Length: 255
Image 1 (cartoon, rainbow, N blue to C red):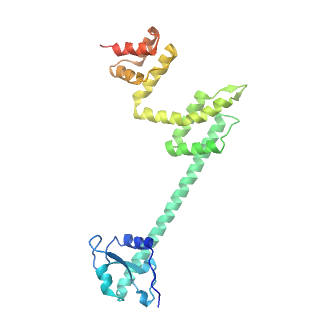
Image 2 (image 1 turned 60 degrees about the horizontal axis):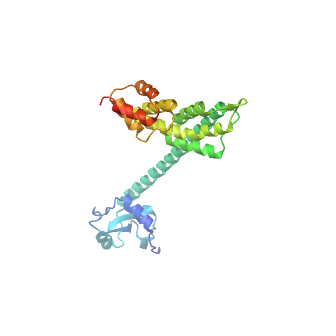
Image 3 (image 1 turned 45 degrees about the horizontal axis):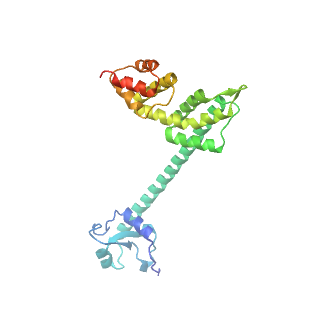
């Protein structure tokens, strides 16, 4: 005769979930009734505590059945249903593993491809482990194609040469600025007018110098929304000696 042992809480929970917290004898469910775990083949008749021999029963049904077994057909149906479910879970887990493995393989291929592009555009240089990890993070965050595009932009803007070779400081900047460029491009997609605003600010800064005030973006946005062209805003900077004066001018238009 098998000795009754305590059923772990984790196993009890799995049985309750499988049976949808419903008594398999009378159909009553929690919280209307207190649920127990019952053995399909009683412990007194050498039934074990494998999940395929466990079933959800309310306190009343469990207390009233004693060592009475379900009918042979009911036992077979219950066990077949459980085995089918376990097999389905196993197959789904295997598919999830294959899918996750495929994602890891794809990620490695993408990181390797970005590294190859970098080495082509920055001859004589390659990323160390820290750089590879950064690229992997950026691909997960922004996508492979966006990272490649931002890499090309960064290299075109910041890479400098000395004696025909990439200059070290600029090389480091090309990697460090990939993420900044990607974030800014994301902002531009969310707010297309922001790119025009930044273009105006850069142009005015080249004319006037100095640092634009914190409210410059909104002042320029208001002027653009009034219908003024970026060229008009930029051209007005030639008559001003400071950013604040230039902003006062464009704010006064149409007043």
